Length: 535
Image (cartoon, rainbow, N blue to C red; front, side, top):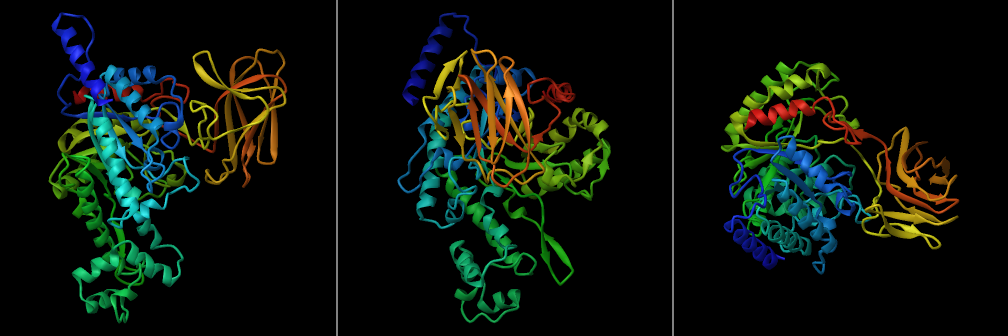
């Protein structure tokens, strides 16, 4: 692939030298001074993008460029790109898609930033692969697997002239921190302390007497030290260790992925000094991201706010953001790439967080440029177009039958420029999806369906419940089901039908820029203004 790209570049140089009128990417040979990014996942969302068909990729990226953005962020799940770390097996289809997206971005004048590693995907059975725990053990199979994954990603991406950079995020490697607050046996806590490297860290930095002072315990040896509880003063020791681990892990990965950065944890974590008293532990030791041209950051307007279902003005949000970013900049010594700017957040789990008054979000967006330019090297959006938390793997049948069970003579065919499931009379397609969605009151099913036969009916079964739809042409149909613990999906036709874009979900993430169907939202023009000002 690299060789072919070099030949293509030589050919283009020859044509340009001959006065050919071929268009060239708008970014030229120099990286942009300021990144204006969109996290790109086509018509799906990051968890299942790489197994989607993305038939409107060219149109999607053209629109992103037209809105004044100069780059996209691609979220690259470790497991989907490297399903097996034992024999270092790579998913070649995913890497081919990466080449395809980068080529398309290049045609539309867009640079590409990679978010390296992502714990959530539908490629395996577990939601969070165990490898994110064992990668803390230097020299383990998963540690070597990670290096091979990062190396292969860099080699693939850097073969493209529009590759910009990459970053990891603290959140992907935070499992041991979350385990501090779980109900675990003492023997498991001791084992986790050793597996994570925490025990070895304490042995190398502190005396046993000092550790006992932190724990308020009577350890006779370091082998008795356990993973701290989150509400105990000893938790500070683990935060300290984990910050060091993350920096060492980043620097080791930079050996195979030069310039790799990290999204740092800007929030402080509670450290209890007494039964009801606490301070906040700052992870500022990680802010510099040594060896990277920038430090990466997720920023929400809720940072530093009360987060009690309250609403603040745009002016208050801007002043707080400027103060917070200045503080982070002073602690890091370098500019931040705010690759995930949460100017609003409709995620149900964070519904109590402070938000900007709905009628002032547009004022906030249009006024962001001076705040951003002071301390940042770029910004990125997570929700450029609304999406749903679709739990279906290969929902657009771009990978053929993979992930689905097809009964009878049903198959996958190309139809009108896209792949569709062909469900013959009284046949069905099914997928086991139970366990992929958070509990909710309702569950929704969207699907595109059409038939060459008049009066065709479609039966959709979710768990033990079923509903029927009478087809009225080639349309997208939406069904609503009450929540149930088992919600595997099955689709059957009484006549030959064509089905595509199957989505099973519980919520829609709203960003007010573009609707799920691509219609322009009320903030689209405001971001065009912001991008123009940032120029």
